[in-house]
Length: 576
Figure 1: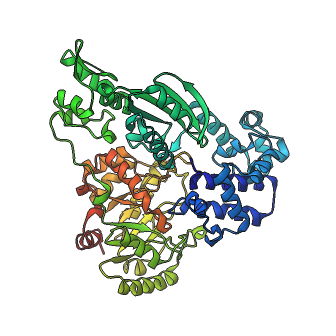
Figure 2: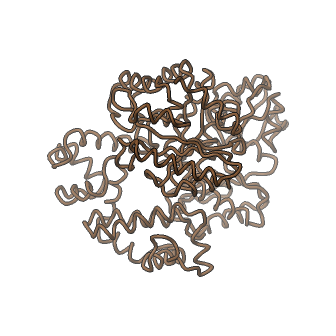
Figure 3: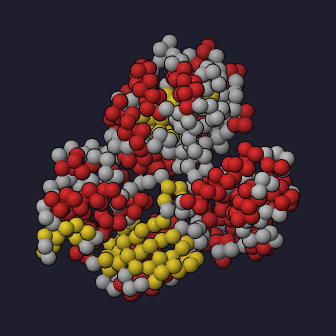
């Protein structure tokens, strides 16, 4: 399997981390980090460029040295220079970077001053109270480190679903290339659209299990073989993802797909439904005594139990069985229902593309509109806009809109909610905008009551359109700040504004439970990519998966509306 862009980017990030821990030249470190971002954002796989012998130095920020390393990684799966760099430091020192709050600079300090080289020695130093004595760390950081180590020990390693997608697609293609395979499906939490994935579960219907197992374990991206059996094998990919494969007969394929898709709670409820008919449901099929009732397809199993087929995203035992029995399951939103994006950034703040580039990319994706919503002045790290710069940007949007036929760029801002709930820009400029997004980027340590009331005051602002990423979480990196989300949902309903489902794979905020609650309370949801480049449009699919888990239909999502309809909706949120 050719090395994916994500693998190359990960190798470059590793090199940058190792160099920073060693205290190397900052320009060299920055070159690797920039290269990692460039490679990860590319819409095409570099393996194809290498195979076609294209000049990689044509890519921005990629010089000859980095181009040679990309070719080496694609052709050999490794880089001599990066391997040498890895060997120059203790083998497990990069494990320290998995602890939130420990970047390369702090790891360098821990290594230099306390000789900490891995997670066990980090835990030992924290428990001994040694970390709090280091300048720039302190007792609070020491406690956070211990909590993070404990949390990491309690749960197996997980990956963002968006990170896993290219690996799942590539392995599915590999399995389908086996001549003895008739059908391949991915089950588990991946199929249910969960935010994070522990491992990948593949099911195969084939007429020669041994040949399939041999083909599976010959996969070029395999790092370790964890198990090898007649009908089940497991391996770990080089990216660290565990993959389990089961070969099942045709007559059991649907039953196995249902069983291994889960969730556990859904499966238990389904088995009880079968038991009420004195039947038995398991991974082999649905049985009346020894007689098979159904099993080849999921649809046949649900039909035998007098239910609609339940979409995998709903299989969490949260009312889906009752709705399926009543044939009242919602028609869930689909990616093609989206007509535009109301949260995007440009080069005016921390985006990577111009307004025109962002707009043309959105139009090419089939959208009718895009809101440019760069950060406001308080977020200096993102080059936030003050009133003067925002007015200049509005002039540029007017100019680009004149060039765009059949497409509309909305004027907007992502304005910071200040500590007292007021907004980061004066009303005089906010009144001139089509979209005013309010969001929290600071003061995460307020109490739940303080944070909730702070956000409610921002929602009450007459210009507010919607609240972005309402809980502030970053999956696998930062927990949500304390906030009473049901109270925010109720307040948004009373105020008449929207809430965002941020489709960035690290956020997916709101979660599915709050999406379902917002739907029940009648609060419209807007699904946005929070795009910072033209390549971020792909994140919309991740947001759609989350929305489906939250039982949302196109009618509950703001940006499924046409340009004319959404203009009215935006006007209706304003109280000025």
